[in-house]
Image (tube, rainbow, N blue to C red; front, side, top):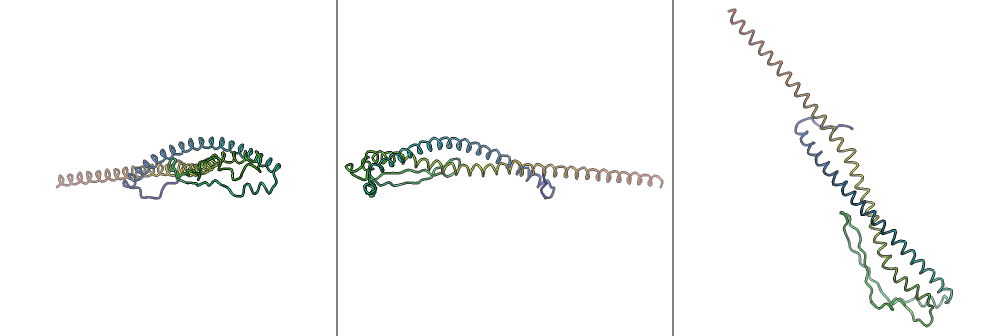
Length: 222
């Protein structure tokens, strides 16, 4: 791991030690966030799978009933029956939060609570299969909305997990090792400088002692 290009001083050593401490704390927090996101993600994926199977099964029933209705009714009657829907739906989108990730919360309200308003026609000229298709389609709509909400949430969590994973790896395999190596390098440099200073001080001391000894010797000779 390459050492950072900085001056090997005690001030830089203190700064880097504080930065390493912060990086390690951030690394732990990000790992905890990643693990919790993964837990939430897997639970939502499971719910999404079960809900998708339910929606696909109900949509399949709707499709089969429409095919039978089309077989027993003329295209003109079928088109007229479905031309003017009676029920109106208002969608509402809000935002939720999962571990700092903004996720959608979808809901809807109907203009009327009367269940018969889902049928936009009279029953005299239509088949029972068409009634069943419309009824099942009305029932599947809340599941479809919930499925859309879950799938978008799963996508957002997956993107956040990937982003968090990259940050964890950058700290674990790049920044923290680089800081550790740089701190070790500065410590070695400071120790080396200290030993050099101590050696020079000892030499100066020896020279001063020798000079003092020679001075005393000269005094005695005089």
